[in-house]
Length: 410
Image (cartoon, rainbow, N blue to C red):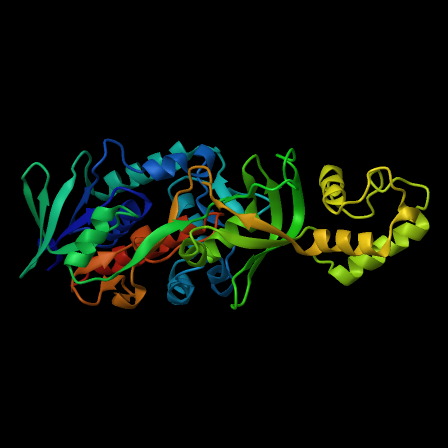
């Protein structure tokens, strides 16, 4: 029965390749054709992780794993019980590619070279019998009675029984999905840095704080908070806590034209009352010491001096000379300082969008379209996005594996 099936996959990225490989290996009698518009497939894999390819994350508990997805966590929970990071690691090892775990949980090939992953996927596809066609841009996609008609830009028409669209955030993919009955959540950026022009940050580029709490103040609504390392840059703020906040706050920030207030506790987990007590103790303990020279907190000295300066405390003041008003002002700056976000920057080459196909229109057991039978989706074309750390690749591996397992079945 399976001999007659032709599966067409549009998109030669991580999801397209993994879906094609999974299908061809699961259903050896099917013909799997993978179409890639560019000259070289897997372009995003090549540049990800600074050219090292952050393949996945060392979080092997699906319940914990879904917390790293601002959008899509509910839909992915069941999906991750079927294919999760442990399965990704096992699959690459079965292909002779060993992964290593870094201290923050990110997983890379032991070669530290994304070409290892690119070559692995290309070889696995060819070995599975996938027909790979590069420089083959698709013009249109049409549903016909017994499958799909794919018109290429050259005018050639391809016919397929089943179709997997894995075109990432390419607008063409969204257009074809819409033509086939889907609704698109408007795609907007996720994972970006904050542009902040503030005297407290000037001259501090490169200074980082290991554990800060950053909070988006959204008038009248519950503030969004993230905790973790924060890096001061030439243009404002970056680092894991900021990138997480940009992901979870992507829609709110977009709706506010990336002009919002950010509150920072530089000394988290200590609160303002604890900090006030530490400053009062320091006042009585270090009476003769200059306040700028002695910081009683785990804070970079240059940032400490900037915050003292911004609190209108004279640099030549000794601890014993600090007034109650100055202690209150400095406490405020350390634990609840407010900064104006004036725009967004980019985060390296990790272009991630939130938005895409409405997840209610997809069967997450198979990744099949509900409005259009025999049509499947995988990867970033879906309204799923993760924070930085290998999570976006993992959702690509998971959704494409599910699609590959289902798409060749009669």
